[in-house]
Amino acid sequence: MQTDKVFYSLFQAFPSIFFAIIGDTTVNVNAYKFVSVEVKETAFRIDGVFIPTSETTNQPLYFVEVQFQLDSTFYRRFFAEMFLYLRQNESVNFWRAVVIYPQRSLDPSDRLPYELLLDSSQVQRIYLDELDTGENSLQVAIVKLIIEREETAIDKGRELILQARQQLADEATTKQIVELIETILLYKFTRLSREELAEMLGIDDEFKKTRMYQSIKEDGLEEGRQEGRQKGLQEGLQEGRQEGRQEGRQEGRQEGRQEAKLEAIPRLLALGLSVEQVAVALDLTVAQVQQTAHN
Image 1 (spheres, helix red, strand yellow):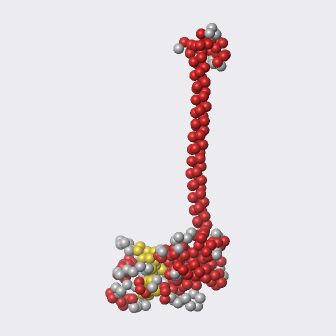
Image 2 (cartoon, rainbow, N blue to C red):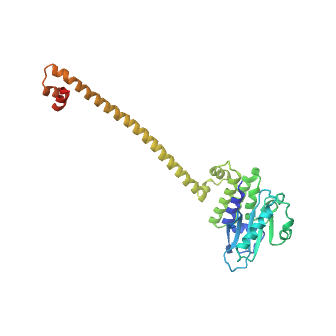
Image 3 (cartoon, one colour):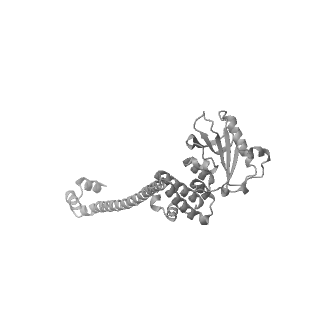
């Protein structure tokens, strides 16, 4: 499952999900934009950064890293990326760092060089399996769907869709939530098509109205057009071959009949017929008869 892409989609569509995860409900989410950042002159790429939209704000910049595999040197890379970014962006004065793990066991033991930072309020480690989804927190529950067991993930997805319909009054937001749930489950169940998943979730009709389905439909239409063009070309080529063979046979017959007429000219002249009489009998011109007779 490509968790980086899933979290990127979540945070892009709903920045408030990130702040719900870290337990800070006081932040004005509209004051941030979420981007992926490549640190210049290195091979470093930070998963995501919540950047304040106003350069004059005292709100902190958030470094976000999603870590779903055990990496013994993760913190050495992570802090190197962060401090290089701070070196290259001198306008940043306030920052926080958040690392998201599926469970605590993937938190590497190589922490001693960064122990003070890890124990400070500037760095927060999130373990999804330990997140509290109390108070009907829909956003946190959607994130926890990423680590839900396959045996229960579809049922959990249905519950979350029902919860979204009950809690959210805005239809556009509800559709976005449904699409996010579908995206998470599609990454989890790669063997399922989008249509099969929509049917399993019981949202087949609604699914056909989503941007995701429309995109799939357009892709299918384009594939159909290409297949149709290809089939048309093949049929046209086949038809052209058939017409060519038919025309060839007709031309062959005509040439054969013409050849037979020309071969009959000497015999008819030998019988005492005049050039004009032979031309009429064979439906030829006098010049054709004379030319053949002289050859």
